[in-house]
Image 1: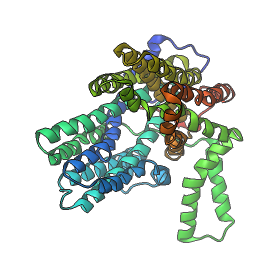
Image 2 (image 1 turned 180 degrees about the horizontal axis):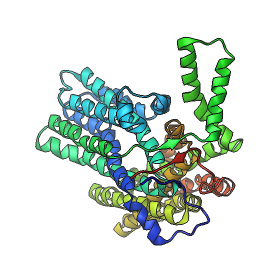
Image 3 (image 1 turned 180 degrees about the vertical axis):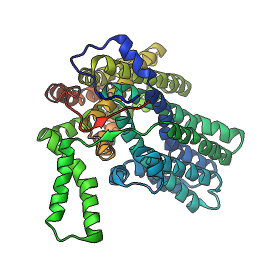
Image 4 (image 1 turned 120 degrees about the vertical axis):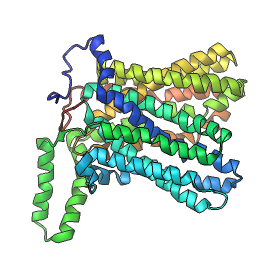
Length: 464
């Protein structure tokens, strides 16, 4: 059945029963499987790939250069306009705009992984690198298309739940591509491990074949914006191929950015600033977490069991809770809460630095940090989704996700020097303080541009 109403009225009270019901929606369930497909290639061209190469005796220099294949995820905004606007021969007509691109990307990933598995790096390292690059670009393209599908497929009140199930599937895939691939390689060989991972991409392909294409339309403001492009071209001497290319470039690249800055005016830069600093506290402290555990005196087994395995369970719990709370209280309230939780929970690590290597202290710190982190992921993805225009979903969301981690990753390069200079107690205090701008911006933007009240351009008609 097609839903004609896309967003819940912010004045309508949400019951807990209604909040829990978001996880029963077919597209929310299906997002877990798309999340699995999105997470699977990440380590297979990253950490697991490096372990494979080193295990076969490839030099560290070569491994270092091959790590550059992961850059594809950092520059995906460059081809996001193509994913947004370019129809694929046959695939777009048969499966639709989003599903066509998702399916193509998944097939590229599966082919790339299979090629890696059937090639020996000791005799054909260059060919393995080509397959790895193919896999990485397929993975980044899949991310762009899946993000667009997730935003367009359901109404705004379900975005938190979509983010939660996406994170769940993504994290399960990380386990499969990490520990799972290593176990297969240990029992058989690396060729079998990568071949098995290529087969697992069938989960995503089958899901893409089952789900329905989102139904969207262009709203009047967006239609007027694109009409101005036509008017501009009519006033120029551009003809033939030049006219078509100019029209495509303006519509695919210029319009998405013009739309965003037109809708939010001077506050657009403030919103982008908020996006860039929201996760800065977590990213800043995350780099030093494992060195901190080791320096404090925890064993590798304790770190693996508590910080990694138990921490993963807490992150998934937090993500599920975040989706529930967004459905219950709305995005605005939870955005402020999530911004507050990130720096506050970092203080538990300062407390742990005082208590020393006691197991209960590590457990408490991991519970606080990972649950708050999971909540933040679900809430923030829902917030970013609320900012997009469904006419330009892929391009605008790729912009947001590209700048989301940039400042944190830059500052993370200085965390080691800071920790050595001030000690871990004050380092984690600093990581909390650096999160204060995000709190202030969250409070201002949630009140000035309430994401639960601002109309999202375009209409979404979710079809289960």
